[in-house]
Length: 232
Figure (cartoon, one colour):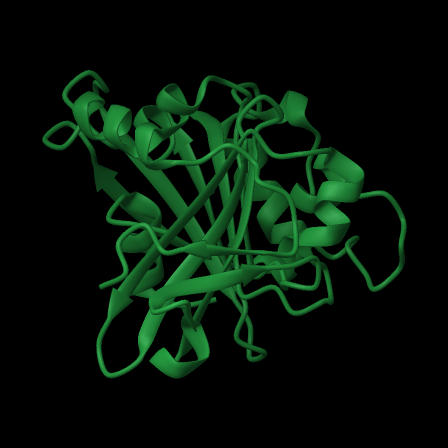
């Protein structure tokens, strides 16, 4: 589903949650589905009300933290505010559920540690609509790799940090796109064109959403080296 958009802001607040909701995704080779990834069926997006969301979290995870996020300043076309519920456990995984105008619109899961890989995702869901990657260079390189399926309402990815020597190919910063890359986070939302997903789910202004889509790449296949889009 990384970037200067809203999801990275989430990571900055607290790192780690897919494992909580993605309890059906085990080491088995069972086909991956929207329900197994997200813990809810696709049809609940936009239809599950706030009360049902809170009851579901309490039944499944026991407790949550409530936050109110004012989005009118960053995204004026959204009238009102977004409610966020978050939870986590001692193993380090955590999750967010977002409600807008009283209805569920996003499940954001991080720090998945159940063996799910990019290869399993592609084998089950087919080729993603987009490949997205981003890197920030410090003493080491902090980078994200993301597979976007906006037509299904799913984005998955991983975030890692390595030294430059581990991420250099033919003199440029690059990563090896391979099947065994672990899925560490998942975003679940209603299917929509990528620009709409970035505006409505990640709360990007329209001009930034357009640029973010343009920065994405078509699916290139596995076993190749991909230069980082912003690696320096």
